[in-house]
Length: 213
Ligand code: SF4
Image 1: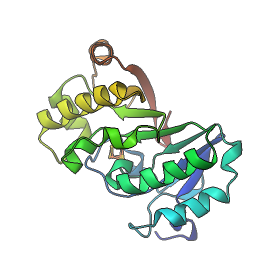
Image 2: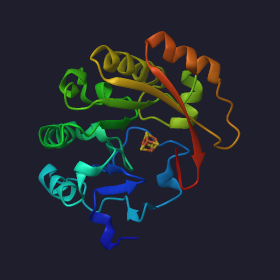
Image 3: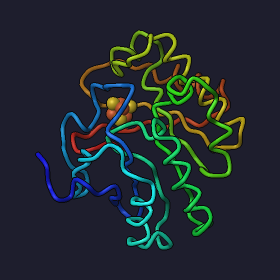
Image 4: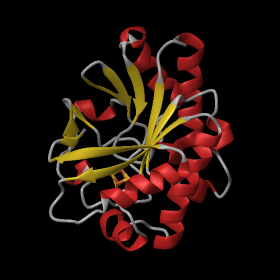
């Protein structure tokens, strides 16, 4: 359902500012909150317009006291790095004007597969941290949970390679899994080992029908 809040890209959870730049995603995860809710924190995250200009989103950011936020995070109902040029332009605005506010991207880790090049160098200096959805300890389970448009092995390896590359370029990188969604058995020990072998952090997110933390 279309609502007047649908054209907003900025929303808040606690004192973190979230920026939603796209409805598009290369996954269709079983547990994605967009399958259960149209809104998060009072904002309908289904964007009415897919091609929102970075300038329009920057205006929204400026209206919402970015200087007083704990963190600014690119995260919404799609994969932010599909719109890498918009993410870069907005992140540069934040870094130029509010250099003390940390900037993070929540990503499915497919950016290099989507753009068919290594985009990580394009993000250095613009984002401080990235959370990347590992989702599973093997490619078969990854595909069951993530329903990616890519070949499952390519996607699962791609996520791991992307995480390693981000860390190599100095971006504080965390691999994540979502626990508590139905009865899927994810081997957390193996996931932890994968993260360790790549030199990145690991975090378990708890699934809730109105979002996961
Ligand atoms: S990668 Fe994220 S946005 Fe895309 S379907 Fe999965 S949970 Fe939703």
